[in-house]
Image (cartoon, rainbow, N blue to C red):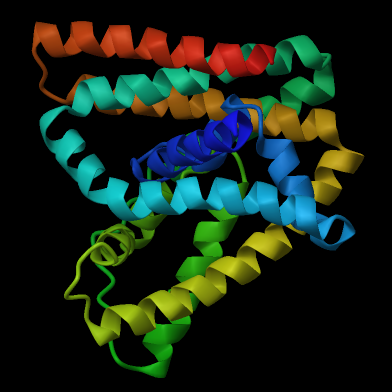
Length: 274
């Protein structure tokens, strides 16, 4: 009983990390030590259906509950407790990084991929769309929503690539956040249900295909893949710290944030040692 509850809790943390701008849910999964197991369960789903359903189902329950009900909480926390909230998740990310340098040899190839991924993510953040996607009752709009679902799956599975950051660049972050937040409302509209169906179709297709790709890459080139993940992780930390430094905060918010960052690091480090 303890293991399913712990797995659901990890799913909750992954879901919260997913809806916070600049934080990658899959990177939180890496920090919690369940990323590779999740990729293997999805990409080799039919090899052990019963075990994979139990694992993915429990994890998904935590993720979905966190996204659906956590979206509104995150909106509140980012508005009133921005600095402590962001520093908590920065601590989670930092706690995972030592694992990669200890486990993999940092030769020239490792460092090359590391720096390429580091500067790639830094470069992506320079672009932000000033337009906002507004869903319409058209085939073209539904196709875009399906594509957003596929892209959300890709950013969900590739560690360090923040779906919220990509959606902000494309101008559809508010659409995605409001779509999940609407699921917790009892007066949800038919249009929201239709949008979520198309989003869900793209999400499921993306999760399966991108997981297969990541599973292949992790088997063939694990060291280089983790070099890429490390580059994404460290660049994410720099970008998040930059956002935090630009936000007005009091001394007490900063102090609480540091305590939460240490707490996040310790939790991540504990899972790293498991």
